[in-house]
Image (cartoon, rainbow, N blue to C red; front, side):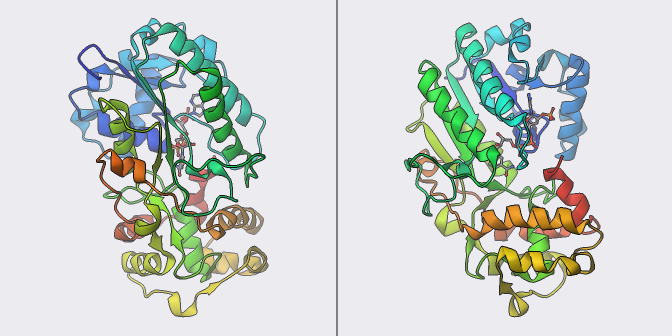
Length: 373
Ligand SMILES: NC(=O)c1ccc[n+]([C@@H]2O[C@H](COP(=O)([O-])OP(=O)(O)OC[C@H]3O[C@@H](n4cnc5c(N)ncnc54)[C@H](OP(=O)(O)O)[C@@H]3O)[C@@H](O)[C@H]2O)c1
C-alpha cells in the first residue's frame, strides 16, 4: 500500500514514457515522495533534465518549480553499483522502471544496459530496500513476430523466440531473468504496445513513430491492408496506467498489456481519415495500395519528392524495420488491465488528427530523429 511513508522511484524520467509518468506525478499530492533516477553529472543537472522534459509536456511553471535536486538519484544502468552510493534508495518502496535503451539498431550496449545493468539494479535494490512493488516496463512485442494476434497476456511464446530486432530480445530476457533469479522481487510486468503521441498535445512532446504514419500516407503505400488494425496507445494514457499499477493497493495479475486491444485498435483507413482531417487534406484511401517491403524499397527514387528532404538509404532502412512490424498486424488483448477497472485507451483515430496537425512544419527526417538517437 502506498502511504505517507512510501517512496516511489521512477527511472527513465527524461524519456518519452517516463517523462509522461513524471508529468502526471508532478501535479499529485504524493509528488514529494517521488524520486527519479537520472543520468547527469550532478543532482541539479538531473533536475534540469527533468524540468526540460516536463516542459515538452507543457507542464505549468508552478509544477516545474516543484522539481527539486533532492529528488534526483544519479545513475546509469551501465554502472549499476555506483547508483547505490545514494542512501535515498534505502527508502524506496515502489518503482516504475521505464529506463531502457530503446534503439532498434544492433548496438553492443543493448544487452549490458537492458539485461545485465537492469538486473543488477533490481537485485541491489531489493537487497537494500523494502520494495513492495516493482513495475517493470517491458514491451508487448517481446513475444516475437510469430505470436498470433490478438495476443493474450497469458500467452507464453515457445523457444527459441524469433525477433525482428535485438531490442525486443533484451526486453523478454530481462523479464524472464527477474522472474527466474529474483523471486523475492514483487514484480509487475507492464508491456505497452506501440506508443504514439499524446491525447491532448499530439506529437508536441515527441514525434516518436508518428513519422511512420506520415510516411505511409505520403507514399500512399504501406504494408497493411486498409482494414488492418494497428494497436497504438497515447503516452499520457500509458503513463496513467503505469502509475495506477504502481500505486493500487492490490493487483489481480502480474502481467499487463497496456494496449488498445483488438476492438479499439484503429484501422489504417480510420487513421487515413483522421490524419487527412488533421492536415486539412483528403484521405488517400482511393489511391492506397498495400505493398510489400520490396515494393516500398523500390520506391526509394520517389522518397525525396514525396517525403521531403531525407536520406533515401536511411529512409529505406527505417521503412524496412517499421514496415516489417506493421505487416504483422499485431494486437494485444488488455483484459488484465480492464479487470483492474482501469479505463480503456482512446482509439488512435480519435487523436491522430491532432498528431498530424502538431507535426505540420516538421520534416519527416527531423521527426524520425526521436527514434534514431
Ligand atoms: N515508446 C514506445 O513505443 C514503447 C513501446 C513499448 C515499450 N516501451 C518501453 O517503455 C520504456 C520507455 O521507452 P521510451 O519510449 O520512453 O524510451 P526513450 O524515450 O528512449 O527513454 C528512455 C529512457 O531510459 C533512460 N536510459 C537509457 N539508457 C539508460 C541507462 N543506461 N541508465 C539509465 N537510464 C537510461 C533514458 O535516459 P537518457 O535521457 O539519459 O538517455 C530515458 O530516460 C522502455 O522500457 C521501452 O522498452 C516503449
